Image 1 (tube, rainbow, N blue to C red):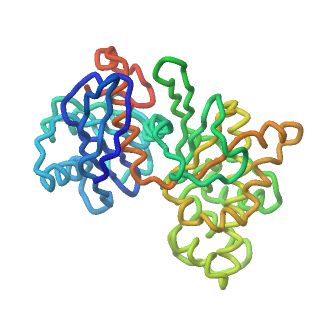
Image 2: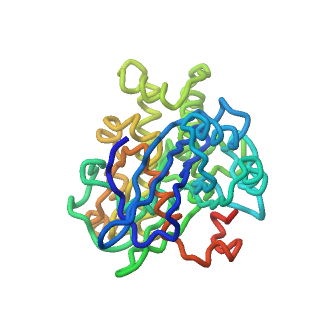
Image 3: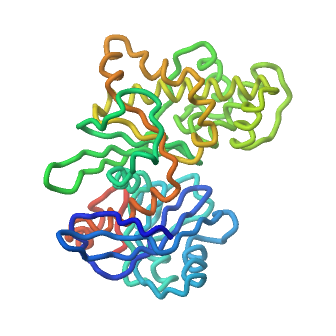
Amino acid sequence: MSSRRYPIASPSRGAPLIAADVGGTHARIASIRPLAEDGGAAFVIDDYCKYACADYPGLGAIIDAFRVRHGRAIDAVALAIAGFVVDDAVINVNLPWAVSISALRRELGLRELAVVNDFKAIAHAVGHIAEGESTLLCGPSARQDGPVLVVGPGTGLGGAVHLPRRGGSPTILATEVGQATLAATTEIEFAVLGELRRRSPRVLVEHVLSGTGLVNLDAAIRALRGAPALVRTAAGISAAARGGGDPLASETVDVFCAWFGALLGDLALLYGAQGGIYLAGGVLPQMRDLLARSRFVERFLDKGAMREALERTPVRLVDHAQLGVIGAASWYFEREPEYDRAPGADASAGSGG
């Protein structure tokens, strides 16, 4: 693994840690080694693996497979997971199995299990993103001061807001932006909403603007155009659009990118994201070239009198597979010591510690 050091303010514990980033499709797991250095502290990633969630009967089996593979008797886990915690359960419709924090801790024999929302963890990793690990889509290239918005379409759609604080750790606000009701602007967007409302009276943002949503959008556009139903994945739709021989796949990706740009413009204004926007998740890197040629930027900026403000907001696409585990480790080491003594202090994450 890389020997890159990720600086942190003051780790509360010095023992090795497992950091896990778990979404609806993949679980990314790493062993983390904290370091005490002159003038500060840091951590490094010793081992890293990616697992397909559907290949395992539960989250405990994945983490146990990682521990067996690397022969490490680590008994503390920082778990970044899609969804939020209610009492002992992680609530997320995209996870392939139920997750109980207390049962997971017992199954693995853990001394400590600390749980955080996955995009809250990614927002903690924002300060660790190097210049070459992101692509500027629009706005100024220099880093800006102010709140930073992190949004990412994966299996679902996650988001968080990073509020920098001088002389201290940032404040991170986790959101459930994917569960908000999706708004339409153009004729095709209204038509798609009408088609999707045949299945559900309420169409959520992530029903269209996510990996699963891209599949829903493709099916809706094919139905609207009178084309036969076709079962394919989000990656397959992106590949078909890139190939240039499938006009309906191209239309699907175009609508997706434009609609996503419009949503981001709304979110940037809602959260006052003068510090910029980072786009993460597994879907956008698969369509990087298509995104650049789409109406994404046009729709992002199309906010009337607020266009000038958005022109000053940098939007970057991040392609860093380890962001979730880096963020989970950063959150774990820098969280307040009182966290473990106050169950439910973070409503979007919970604590098993």
